[in-house]
Image (cartoon, rainbow, N blue to C red; front, side, top):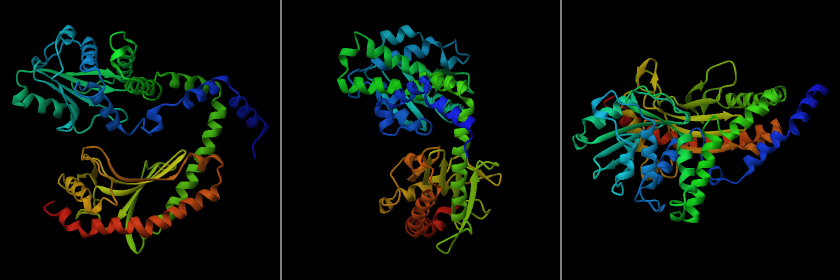
Length: 418
């Protein structure tokens, strides 16, 4: 039963003018929010958007304007490199040079974005990190790839480490750059008397919406972040009360998930299960899969089913794990991952797995939304349980059976020579 004090706290929070302003800003239409661009997880989409703007051959009408502005601003932030292979490049050169021959590649040798201009003897690599940090000595490996490529032997080289806040890279030759600076470049082009007339109405809308999305959802000092901080400090008790209730619902949902996975048998098939994070609070992720998805050391293969149980959202997905994943302190053989990927991208299985690309990050091959925001509004736990159970009845008898059969029939081929 809610107390009078708690009711007063919630009512004061609900009528706060800053909360109304925040709701109005969040309610504004933004094409990237509308199509479900994830702030946290879809670095690939943000890399694709940047590659589009940076590529002079794309149909945005800017030719090399965005590319030149981007490189010029990056170089203005740069100290003198310590490595002779990365000699100081003047930002003035970017104004003078013509980059209309530049080719922009995605995921070349796993580098997020590679810009290659033969005319200007310049190569630029961009490593884009939004919600993840460096791993597997990425920056060092990518730098070595570029340094050892004979085609780029006499090229000027620019290495850029792009993050929301301008985080410090592990390697000295990588230039620190932030998403707020990207947003500033987009805004300056959209407001420029020289550049704006080159933009069609569609491209202008695309760029302004993307800049707004960056400012509101990616950088921590964004207008949305500042407003949220102000509201939190003024209504901390009310917000904590709301969070306690939300976490209770999340915990109840996790109990239902555990019931589905215990006993660890689905349709007569024994399964493995594990959760993350493994703390006292309800885990956000529960992974499971068929017991025969294991190698001789009893380490699970890189593929698994996953419940993602977040505040206001419940999903099920099939995922290939990270390339740097280790189990039982032993690195899973590197050959297994591409074999799995190649198998599941076969056209024969297109009904079960979405088409995607192989990279070093987690690869989602299937995803379905079980509970949405509206399911949480009334907080009717009985209806939520029924919806989860209805999903599970269909999933376990159909998708789980078909998917495990595909993997099990190919298990020997996958593990061969590993």
